Image 1: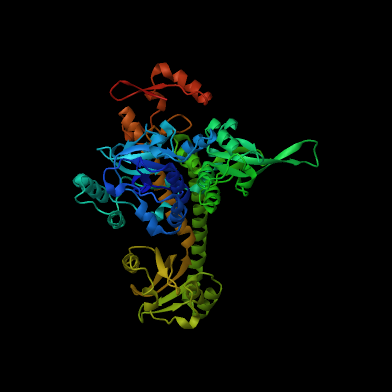
Image 2: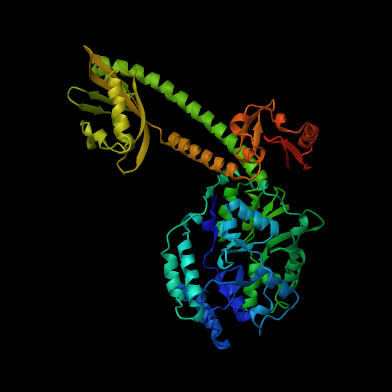
Length: 613
């Protein structure tokens, strides 16, 4: 799973309107664009005032807004001082009490107490998630040092296919703000089209590094289950108005729509989940001016609920969510069919980077590395055994031409025989087949081999051969990449030995083995280890691991920041040495009762106590 950097997570062109914008237009904006919120900014110049068409023309215009991306660009507002916000949840609350949503500007109902964050105060993705978790919000406007709006972060913006998303440049933002300060008198106002062109041509910037988590090693049951009181089921016969009232009362964004059905094997009725209704659906229904009192839930709910088992991996869950463009939640059920959780994009991104989830993922990853290492060791033993067998065959091969034919026919690896005097090489049929060629497509010239070696590997191969021919090594052995007929590269293990006459090498025989699969596994393993090391060191809490005797065998970098002791000097020492004597019994009790969190005092390097939880 790709976890974006701060710069990638920010939407630098959020949907904004001015306080004078009619509420009807705001609702249609949210419905047609899929925005989960609208930001209200001050109208500092005529260029960012929304021109509202007559009522009769609005439907046509907003239909164009959805279908014409160029038209949509012209509706984007210049960024300025943010004065309010209006979200899906705010709309649900108003609809639940039958409030009229027409005939007045958004300024009358927008939320004025806005939680914002300065971009300089968000060093990494963990700090960003901490703000969202602290205030229990899903939308966070990002401002600069002058409290001017820069962009918007939502929980949805953290989960999509970010490797394809373009980063936006701070140079563009700074230029736009300089223009805004010059244009207070309206003398030099840049058009929105010019701003967007500058935006698209901006250089790529990053505030921090993105992360990649192995979703196949993370299970859904690692995510904290929401309380049963938050899994709300409603009859399909309820009206949409009643559905909105349930959403507002329980402060949730999704309602499971069910219907009763007869159970032929039992004397009671069971319920079947028909689908879900979300706050996003309520926005769209309001834009269409549907009668919420007369319309039933069964007519508008999503009729294909996305079900997943609790034992499934996060990789499976994200694949299912992607099919619905991340708009529908996942309904997590046990093998018996009991609904135990509802997973949304918000839930995934907020919980998967919590220390507890990361520790569980790290444990699974450790086991995965261990299992993979064992498998690699077994493969290496097989290669060694195969090498011994090939060496025996090669000895026989060197005696007579007849034994050469026998060895080649009985070996599934690619055998080669280099006549150093004539500089010609015999390539076996299997050698040619390994590279995708027929027997008649490769001659006995040495260039048939040299010209297919990866450019970055040719030097190390030359060194290895020269060292062996100079008797600096007992045998020739090297791993490198070689090009196939289809122009793809494979990893091979090349082994051989030279034959000398009067101290001069005259012949060299060896074999080629395809090791692409094990090599790619090794490279992937190294990359994942590096990624997990970065994640653990970014956690602002101490992560440690001990052996069976309590001696420290792993510490993240936060250890030194909190205690003052270096990781190098702390590893190998018993962790109880760092615990205050009065807290050691408390620590043992906490370890046996993991549900209770107690503060423990560490003795820092300056002899002062550091309290941890």
